[in-house]
Length: 292
Image (cartoon, rainbow, N blue to C red):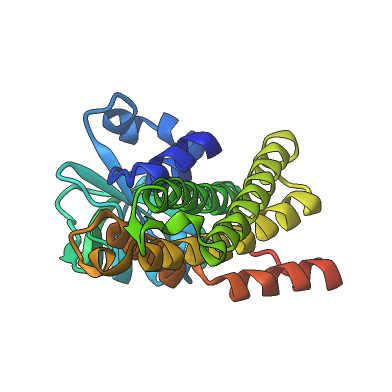
C-alpha cells in the first residue's frame, strides 16, 4: 500500500487512492459490490479519513438510515462515486454509505489534480456498513492506513521533484556553465537527498509496523514520525524545485507548480509537520497523543 501511494504521488495521480485505502475490509460489504468490481469508486469525508471531527448524524433503525449535517471536504470525487462517512448514530459511532443521489457539491481548491466536494445532507438516505465497536475499530484502521498513505504520497512527490530538479540543473546553463555545478546548488540538493532518504526510511518503517502490529503504541509513534518527516521534506523539496527551475516554474502550467499545489493542499488538509510533531511529543510523554 505504501509503495502504491508513493508512486501515486510521484505521478500526481488524480484517482481515489486515499479513499480506497480508507475502506479496508469495508469493501467486502455487499453495498459496495460495485466498488469492489471496479465499476464505481468511493469518496470519503475528512472525518472518516481522520483529519476532522465527525459533523454528521444519522437517525433510523436497521440497515437504512437518514443522514443530516454538513461535511467538507469530501475527498476524491469522480463521475461514479459512493460517498462514505462516519456518523453519530444513537450516540455511537457508525460508518454509512450514502445513496448515489446524495452527491456532494464540487469545490475549487489550489490542487487541480484532486477533486474535492462539500456534502450538505438533509435526511439523505444511506446504508449502515458498521456501527458501535465495529465502527470504532474500522475508523481506527482507516485513520492509520490513510495516515501512512498520505506520508507515502508526500514521499513520492518529494522524490519526483528532487529527481527532476537534479536533471534540470545538469542541463540549464548560466554564466557559461550548468547551474548544477555551483556549490550552493550542489549543497542544497545534497541536503534534500538526505532528507528524502530519511523520509523513505521513516515511511517504510511505519508501513512495516502497520503490517506487523497495527495496534501497537510503537506503530502509532512510527506513523507520527513518518507524517511529520514527510511533510517537512515534501514542503522543502517543493519550494526548492520551483526556485531552482527559475521563472518558468512560477507559472501555474508548469509541472513544478502542480506538485507544489498538491503538497500544500495535503499539508493544509491533513496537518503540518509541526502539528504532527506535537503527536510525537504527546505519544512519547504520555502515550495519549494518537487519535489514529
